[in-house]
Length: 404
Picture 1 (spheres, rainbow, N blue to C red):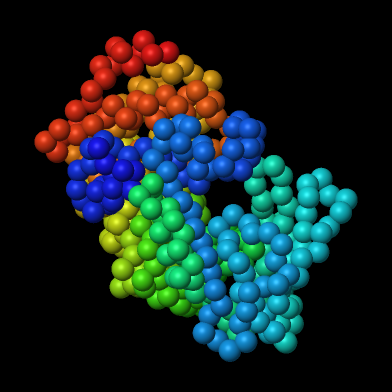
Picture 2: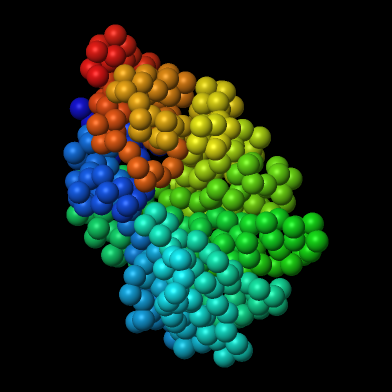
């Protein structure tokens, strides 16, 4: 019997585990509070019988003189750590009353002027109302003054040591302060707006590459700092580079050149990369694989707004690349029977995991789910074991159906 960490690492290294790992992506606070009584993520994994993941993201000031941890930061947004600022790159938050949703303006103050973004939030998420980049030369302030955080390797390794063999230790390539994404293109869409950036790839591609280069240099600095960090895998990418948002040509010209280099740098630092594409993937499978990630996710099915045929994806994705995801959490974590959830588990594992190389996981986060169905999801996956390197599910489907 393997530990969860051994099970994850066996799959990520091309081996065969005792059974297929079963887990989730980052668990939303909304779900933990609304459906689980406010338990911790660790308690959720244990209660549900899932293979756990520790998301640890300690950052520290970079090598530039005058960088320091932001003393004004009171909270960290999703995909954010402790912000790194300087006397030439200061961040101020101002709450904006009287709006339908709670709102705040973030001002990024430099010696040559200020940039600002306006965010709104609800119980589920946050979104950009006014993007940071409003004029093209606003990016000059980023290039001149934006700080570059480093991985706090010492703190991360202490956290990994304390976590032990319980599960996977995971993080992501650094994002823009307050609101960003791990992928270079995805970070840029958060600052400019997705539709606006797509249009600029036709109207002013040189400017788009200039912006991507500024953000890429920051991420590359972070990727180089990962040497010695005891991560098991880090995330890169994001949904705005999916085929339901951009064309394969935009991917080739504006996504792959930057993110492939980040994957190379992460590999040089001894790290694995999972390339995250929540949305359409089928026209991009070979393009993503060509960037040489260690894993690909989320393999979103049509019912969740994607386009993935999981069995066809497994045929096209090289065997040495682990596939993560593919489970339709919208349909099978809500308003269905346990038998239907269990049957979908079998379908996913049979389609993508017959010879290993697959981590069963929902196709990204979820906010509402029936805990009873999440338990059935994990329990059915436990029966998907391997004998002599081949999938050998130990529970007959008739028994799975009678469980509900």
